[in-house]
Length: 166
Image 1 (cartoon, rainbow, N blue to C red):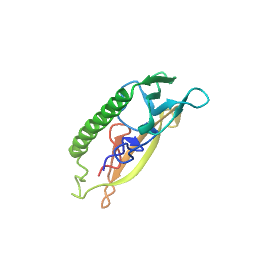
Image 2: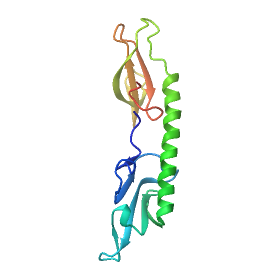
Image 3: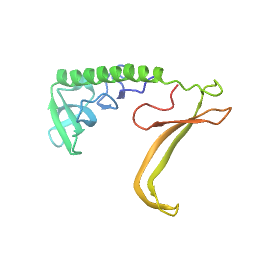
Image 4: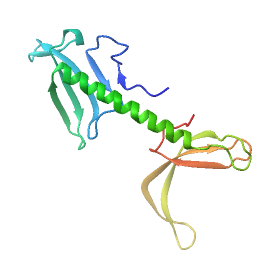
């Protein structure tokens, strides 16, 4: 089952006052939240359930990491959430195709490899006498799949697929 797109999901929680977008935000927008608003409160606006809202407030981090806010109509907020769901569903289809293309069968034993976890490797250069000349501050994360029969291992770089591959 794909990861959820919203928290809470407006499809299953009929009257949320705030919806956090977990996946499917447009490029350049991270940590998006839609707050449903109405007149009142100390500052003249308060967060209310969707059924009582007069407007919406989109809060997010832009691509530079700055906090941003955008006042929206209710229809604009619903359009934003529909588009996020559409993008997340398209990403799920694309990821399912990539997962289907991965063959985890060990070429030696013809047995399916099992997920062994994520491993971090420090980058470095070999010194003239066999030691390590310099270690980088960067760690490369790899996801490992190991054959339960012969122990051969296959690595996948982090960030391209969601692991473990089912």
